[in-house]
Length: 233
Picture (cartoon, helix red, strand yellow):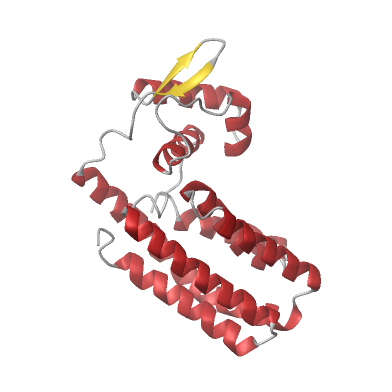
C-alpha cells in the first residue's frame, strides 16, 4: 500500500489541516515560508512549490512581499465521492498501523508501570496537559496526541523503537482523523480519547502493571472498532 506523501504534499496537507481544523479562516495569512519549511521539514524551494500548487487550487493567494492568504471559506471539492475515497484510504492505513500497535502498546504501558522514572512520568504528564489545553483545536490536539504517544516510547530509551513508532504514527493518520468526523463526533471522540489516555497514565503512575496493560488494550480496541465503522454517524 502506498501512503507516502511527497515533500510538497506534506506542506499542502498541513495547510489543508489548518483550514479544516479552524486554525486558518478566509482572509488569514499563512505562516511564512520559513515557518512552513521548518514545520514540514522541507526546503523553502519545496514550500514555495507547494504554495504555488495551493494557489492553483484556488485555496490561497500569494502577495509578493507580503505573504500568502486563505481565500476560501472551506476546502472545495469535499463532495461525498471524494470524502468516501479519503475515508477508505484512511481506514486502510489506520487498520494496518493499529494492528501492530496492539502487539506493542500494552506491553509498553505495562513496562512503564514498573520502570518509568520520575522524569518519564513528568514528560508523560506534560504531554497529556498539552492534549487538554489544545482540546478546542483539532490540529493542535492531533499533534499533542502524537507527542503523548511518543512520550511513552521515548521513555524506553530505544532509538530503533522510536523510529519505528514514528512510522506507525505516520501510517495511522495519512489524513486528519478528526477532520473525517462530523462536528459533534469530533468533540465526543476527543473526550473519550482524553479519558482513556488519562486512565492509562494514572495506572502507570500507580505502578499497576495489569491495569496499564488492560487499559491500553481497551483503548486500542475501542478506536479500532470505531474507525472500522460508519464514520459519518
